[in-house]
Amino acid sequence: MVDHWTPQLDTYLDGELSANETRELDAHLRTCPSCAADVLSRLQLKRTIRSAGQRYSSSPEFRERIRKSIAAKPRRSPVRMWLGATAAVALLLIAGLVTISVRQQQLQREHTFSELADLHVATLASANPVDVLSTDRHTVKPWFQGKIPFTFNLPELQNSEFTLVGGRVTYLGQAPGAELIYQIRKHQISVFIFQDHAVGRDLASGSSSQKELSFNLQSWTQDGLRYFVIGDAGSNDIHTLADMLKKAS
Image (cartoon, rainbow, N blue to C red):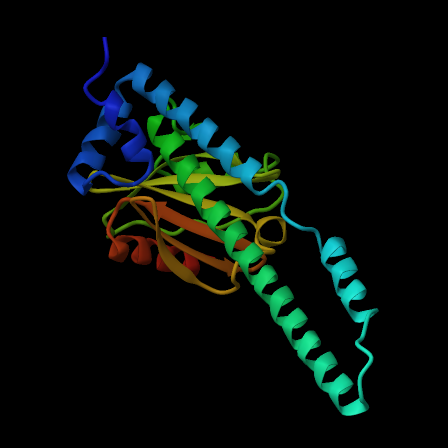
């Protein structure tokens, strides 16, 4: 028998449900193993298709061969025309290479943010979302020692609306990192922490905020680490938690 929510799972993953429907489906996924497994299967297919689409991007070596082949065949013309033509070709080539490079960085950035959204949804759908369950930062932080190749600080949540749920080890590509789960009111927020050199090569430095699927996301670098805060909570809540993490570090 088809579950009431089954026809809406693809719409959910595409971020096209309303905020109320998204919250209702989030709650449903925590109690329905069948739908949760279906979401995880669709996420895996989505990530596989996305990776296949980027598999055949042109390499720097290929672009360099094209550049050399163009530069090696100047037109025979008077000196002034030759210089003008060469300059025009060089400008077009540089512009083309810059455009390709910028576009590749943009695609990689979009891929990274989309993969983080997938990890966040998978956590929401999991029957066991955390490996260490505790509201005490002095319990959660030491648990990661020896499991990831870096350490980090967590903020004091006293007198705030945030509650620490726990944490787990996660991976972005091949890079190991920490995923921390915070709750504010009925919203769950994932905080991902990785070594910046392992995941941030094609990400803008500093801080950035954006929407990914139906989630708000904020990212920044600090002390050699790359932080991502993502969830369906309001952008003000995401910004407040991000500020608390920055001050703790």
